[in-house]
Image (cartoon, rainbow, N blue to C red; front, side, top):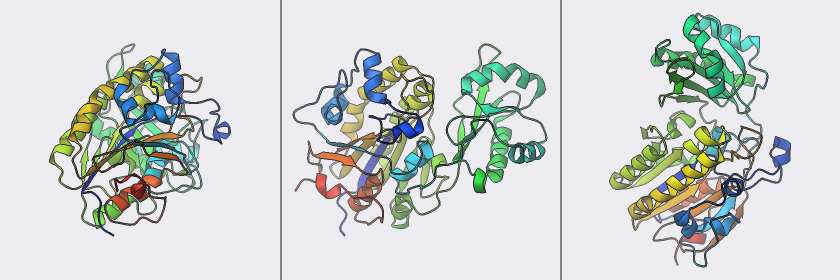
Length: 393
């Protein structure tokens, strides 16, 4: 099979869902629609560049009308895996399907986890319950400073999170604690991610820093990232991609501070990488606004990305394809502060891409993996490639 392109840039807009999946009610997410509900909450979104690509042709979004001649191929994808978390979504984009969701702990972690964890780190923990990260830091931060005990918490997602003030528990020690937790959380307790949540400041004015780090389970089978690297294609991971895949199938990792830094780093990669995959996650939509039920902040973040989109499009080379998608939803307008079970948008752009192709509703995020493989002249066993559907004939 002959390669169609030399380079592909894949951007995941973390949590930018586009409507409830048929089984959303099973997950408590009936009525969720991150993009449409956010637009409605703020009186319309101003996304002219995403609109020109065809975002409004996928679904009715206030402020983003459909266009007669979209610049990109467009569609939406359903999540075939069980779950709605970051790891599951990204793994499926890269070609892995999970039949069972990762374990969650709505009532905190059991003694068989917490007791050996406390023994290994040499101190007790505070919290050990499901909570908002910013709220539990405000609640327990002062006690943490006084005692030196780390704050452990979780959410509706499969995560074991450890928060610590950088002047009380140095970041390297916090990372060591996370590695201890990662070693303990195996078998039936194999959560998707252990997350370090360092913060600074004083009571009433605590602020999480950008030195967050995720310690993920390694993928249980080869992904399309492994396929690419095994065939000599570099894979550059921008944002938290390296953490999500535990470094598997990645040749270079570029960590970022926020969305705009992520855009800067992505464009820099596009300017220097001759061939291979650039895989970017932009996390602010989810972390700063979706989980905090802040539709105005969410809308502002979407509009900020849209303003930068022309720079990304202008960096797309003649032998390149750009794919923009998401990994799940996180509707900031619902009562829940957790991820939502939603379709995700699919936009495919490039000089070789036939504009305006309607890719319809794909049955799995893994169609991206199959397509990425075919674009590079390779074959991946899961998903249905849309590469031949979009290439100019």
